[in-house]
Amino acid sequence: MPENATRARRDIGRYVNDTLRDRYFATCDTLYAMGAPIRSETDVETSFGTTHVYRHGPADPAAESRTPIVLIHGSGYCSAMWYPNTPALSADRPVYALDTPGDAGRSVQREPMWQPERAAQWLDEALDALGLDRVHLVGASYGGWLVINQAHLRPGRLASVTALDPGGLEKVGLRFFVWIFASLFASYAPKALRPRLAAWLEQPVIVVPEMREWIQAGARAFRIRRPAPLPLTDAELGSIRTPFYLIMGKRSLLVHPKRQLERVPRVIPGARAEIIAATGHGPQIDHPDMVNARMLSFMEDVDSLAPAAGTGA
Image (cartoon, rainbow, N blue to C red; front, top):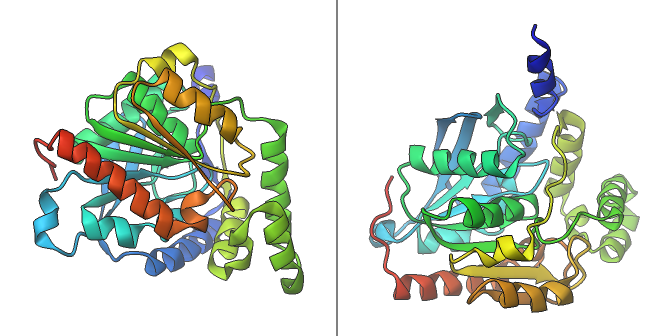
């Protein structure tokens, strides 16, 4: 095999084996069942592999014509993380949740796509394959970097961007990686200790049995093969003209919330930024009702100023 093909595979995430993959998928399906009903699943082809997409709602046919929401999950896992959010979001408008190739979902990666230009090309191709010409793009953590990057490099299909405690604003520091590993180990602690550890780590998923099993199964089953994204500069952020909403947890360890609360509205014209109290890295999981309502209000404001020309598929 050519040497360059071997190098490319080092940039491609993989499952350890089929048995662990299937066990992980079972935990994903448990979480999906806790969210909004999945109306359909489809696979779309891009230059970087096959992207698996979940379609939710809306129950009201009149809402089908509204500008859809596209959800991009965080690093290492899949669209199952959105189960606290899909009921409210899909009651209001169509929702598409994409499994990012290179993470532990049902997508299949064939080419590396961690570079900013490639990541933006992947998402643009996926939206094109779905027939979506205008979307409200929402991303959390690593998915937050993906949506910010999209607004910077390929904003043409974007009605708005919402970034939830995102990567891409600061260099990922040691404190975040320590928190990730500590949270994983805490998930194996005796049941009696988990509430105390969950409070100390700002990691309430530890006490949600279905999420705890999902996190553990994903860590065993999948190996990520990409570097942490580099943060966007002020000049790069300043190029963004898409309506932009930043939501951060007050005790986030990925960003410095107060710093970004001042910075983002200053460098991105018209951007909103907000800090949610009593949460760390997962405001949309810890406080779903609040965050869902605020995201939908933001999208409503955007749509009222620039009605969608069409929603595609």
